[in-house]
Amino acid sequence: MNPSSGLGRLRAELARVDRTLWVLVVSQLITSAGFAIALPFLSLYLYRDRGLAMTVVGAIALANGVVSSFARIWGGELADRIGRRLTALGAVGGRIGLFLGLAALVAVDGPVWAIVLVYLAVRISGALAMSAITALVADVAGQGRRMEAYGLLRVGGNVGWAAGPALGGYMASILPYWTLFTATAVLTSLAFGLLARHAREVVRPAEADRSAGRFRDVVSDRRFVAFVGIALLVFVVAGQLVSTLSVFTVDRLGFSEAQFGGLLTLNGLLVVVFQYPLARALTRFPRHRLLALGSALYGAGYLAFGLSAAYPVLLGAMVIVTCGEMVFAPHTLAVAADLAGTGRRGRYLGVFGLAETLGWSLGAFVGGVLLDAFPTSPLGTWGVIAGLGAVAALGFSLWDRQKPCC
Image (cartoon, rainbow, N blue to C red; front, side):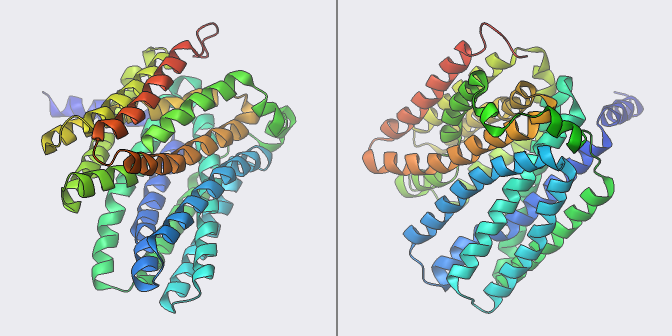
């Protein structure tokens, strides 16, 4: 192979991507890494250093997940009314101060209620920013390339999530916890500067607001609501990735935390390497079929976790789950954006974001219930999860049959 021709193809590929999209991808990488440096260790701080019961810590996490779900709607509304860029900048800028506030509270062992309230505000600001960013990605990419664009955005987020915990874990082993939140504030400042300097608005807010209906008009769109309802089932399945799978792998099967971490590392590496080329390769296929395929792969992958306790089988199951994730995730965002008109795109993606965040929160709860209900039957737990994936696959196969959206 001629190296110069390969380099030329790479340059041509990079040139196809709008600069604003690259800015959003890089900022997503930075903010994901910053979030992952500190927030995963907040639960450990509250449990080990402040003496909270894990039930209370779990309740805090669930409450924040629910609140941030509804903040996704608010973020979509703001993105349509005042603009995607301004909404994102306000949310990301606010996070800088919130992370510094968390650093100060942790440094002085401030009141737990204050730490929880600031953490709640962090999650809300993140939800506001995400609704605006996903809407801006849809605006910049245009209808024909949204799957590729959301694939790139997911790659950036996954690189950040892969790097953040490793750096945070090293810092936590040699430095006090408050320094993690300070580092997160610094990284968030870099993302803010990048967005402020280089991100451009594509849809004018006044123009978007004139063409937009009220929020009730979005939820009265039966086709869209059906799509979101089916997707919610898949997000419940996807929500097994962390809490349910960690307890199952470590507590039920007896593997080490490092081996469970290996499963998550495999998931992240596969997304980073294959997400974008896969999204490009699948653009020629009907999206409702891809949604059905992704749902089915999700279900099949989790079912495989219940078939054998051998670690190679678990690795294979994670490959299947990740394939489902890579097929499903960017296509749902693209379909949600396509179903919305230009002026309502923020609202539609906000409602979709509510289903995504709420589904992941419900997934952890449902998985915990199933683990308690089937303490000695892995197939009982994962069979129910796989059933949800199968129902969603059937639902997407029937949805859009009469009037394909894309």
